[in-house]
Length: 481
Image (cartoon, rainbow, N blue to C red):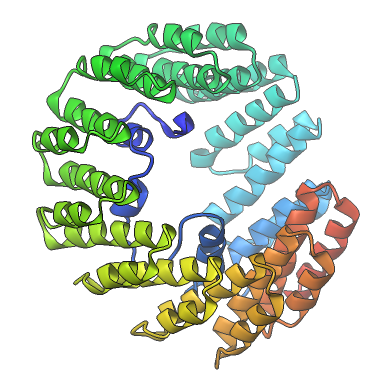
């Protein structure tokens, strides 16, 4: 159970109370760009988003600028960010925000604040808040509070102070965090800060103190959510059930009780409570969580029965997808394929087949994984699946086989993406020389630049600034800047 995923709003709270349910996946509606859960999946999703254009790609320029800042090449970083011509874009703001925060971490506070003033108003609050958090993490609490005080409105000031309070709590400065929280205007902002403090205490094993903090919440609804989450985190399920009964509205109460019931394996009780949920969407979410929990408990047939009770075909398809993925992760790939093939929605079916193919590769069933990938109805998801398999092969130590898979693509674009994923996986595994060799073999200069940027970022995060600087300059040269 990971309490850090708990937020006061209802939907986010349920992500904690039912950690096995895959809530995020159930709500996904974009089935075109396929991604998988876990380390391989995150990299695959990033690596094989085939629709992206790369001619002086502003996202790539933004990433290069941030890497340059990490290696303390601040002037060069600002120069690259200046090459992003779309003023006010997310990419430009992201670059400038990363530069500003890194300047703060390096102790160049005034310059960090100057850069923060160049982002759009929409991003300025976030940028200054992140500078404040960076100052807390470096021990400069007074500087952080001064930055928060410089914000132009009560709302933006409160948001920055909330972030500072949570950062203080994570640093173990609970009393000071509570002091900052007391200065916050408005119950909602104060509740969010208190939640972060309670979270930090619970994660540090100070459950009783976390419960004390939760009792100070300004409204009963927020208090109930956090108390329930802390109780579940601490394994106090009877107490969690008792607290959940105090929820102010029936819908929230039913949904949380469902999550707790699933957590302790009381599936009949969970299904009974789910029936009281007022709307189809939350009911489908709860049923999806119960179905996945049943799969993990070995009750496959009952899980499939639950999926058949869904209120519409789209929601049923998402539940069957969850069941197929859970089966694949449990090593029951053939049964997972049967379930996937029964999905009537092609988008969810494609997602399920993608996940199964990568799961097979991760456990060494490479030929079967490739066979599954070949069943995809069109080339884009097939390329994504093959790319994910290639990355899984690298992580399994089978580099040459991964390169064979990448070279099997008839077109340069998907081949470039697969090789990019392999290069980045090698860099993350510490195989720098081999990562650079693969990156240099990418048949597209823009994608090659992207791979080199990711490799440089990995090196910068590991403190290898000299090598990172050399490689990031190679990336810059490739895109003609």
